[in-house]
Length: 393
Image 1 (tube, rainbow, N blue to C red):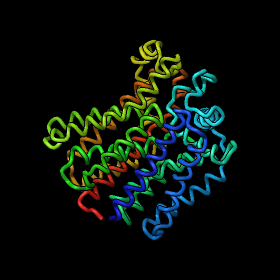
Image 2: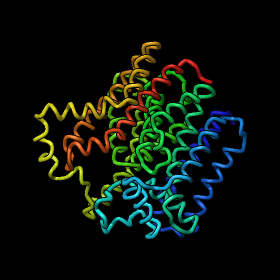
Image 3: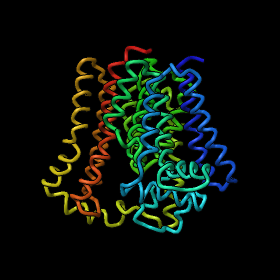
């Protein structure tokens, strides 16, 4: 087994265990199955750590430090307490991801996908009780599959730069119980896999069944982490298809592209379940046009959104790095792919903010810095990928 294959297989094992945990909590399996599944996840992590500690020491040290920090920080922010860990707590006591069927506590956005809360509740099931500290550690554990997989194509000093980008942009969202950091990293790896499996001739990664399967699992996970993940996955498929129409290699692999589109099935089932039980989203509802139309004609609204989203310091630094990276090493196809994706997502964010049912300024002030992390991380990540494109370690 090559070094790259080892990291790919560890990553696939972990993401499959996360997804199987979600499945088990949807079909009411015996509690022992949930415990065994989580123990297997931890054993795979331990195996990854100690098989050869000096192989990828940066991630092992990095992750251990954040694990210690996570154990030492309580929940105190509203979203982790009232949405993500609140959903996890309900799943823990009701032993099902469908615990939201009664639509209790509508403020907690019961329609949100529950992959991360389900994994968090399983940690509590394994321990045997619930408290407000250790269940959120599972959010940190969910970062491991994409972080481990990244080492299969970025190694040594390049991987250290990658971890520096993770630390700079994601920061405390690695351990504070929010889902925005997970969205950013899962989307970036999903976009990377989509591009190099379908739109690029270079063997930056092997176009093997293993990597198509990893992509399939990451796509499912992205859509089940948060509503934004579904929007991002739709954008990713749309952009890849549009660019791929003029690319002969894509046409040869159209059947694999269609196969990967089945990754939407779990989130479709979830949304159908929510709709059939009248569990709705506060932000996308019948009044969306009533909220949107009065704001469309006010130039100050666009300035305000631009200020909160595009003048974010981490976004600006990432943008400068992205531009410099593609100026140093030209790759028009990759540049177009990334630019098309992030521009489309920024337009979606403008639409969401303009149609928000809550106070416009409050929504921007409370959410813009979080959601722009996905854009910031994406352009910084692909800037690094572009600089390393001609070198496979």
